[in-house]
Length: 224
Ligand SMILES: [Ca+2]
Ligand SMILES: [Ca+2]
Image 1 (cartoon, helix red, strand yellow):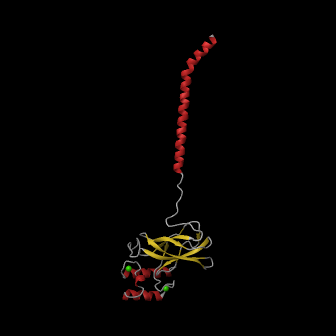
Image 2 (image 1 turned 90 degrees about the vertical axis):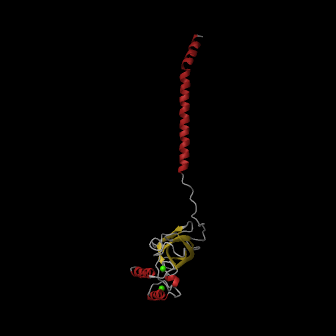
């Protein structure tokens, strides 16, 4: 009986310590659990959102698509920021390694304050590396640089900005005396058939600004 009595005494003596220890362990478990939940929540917040398709693009294995941006001299921050025509028909032509034409597409691109940009649909052709040339009314075809561009039908192919060159008034993809003579005639008479084309900066006026842009084109082509 004495032994049992001692045992109870010990139990009464150590019970508060036992209870306190249990409380400490419980608080520790609670805090660790809360920290883990917070970490899980934080990790979930750090996960990148699923990328969405670019506006206007729908993947189609039968249609390779390019996002094109063209810069026209004298339109934008280097000249007229409010062109009369805020959309332009731009033609994109794809060439293979032996310079054969693989595909072509035209679309109306929208002015964004600096460049005309938009998606051009090129149809079905094999994924690969190609040369891409771009033009609009009255300009030469300009190569998108670097000259070798990888095109695929599994995503929107975003092309670097390409600068176009005015002055191909006769629309034969060459800049020569025939273009110069025709343009100068338009500047002088202001009644020629190509009047819209020689208003290069698209401000509704045919004046020295347009003539200087023409001279700039000839300088650029001769410098190439
Ligand atoms: Ca020409
Ligand atoms: Ca003008």
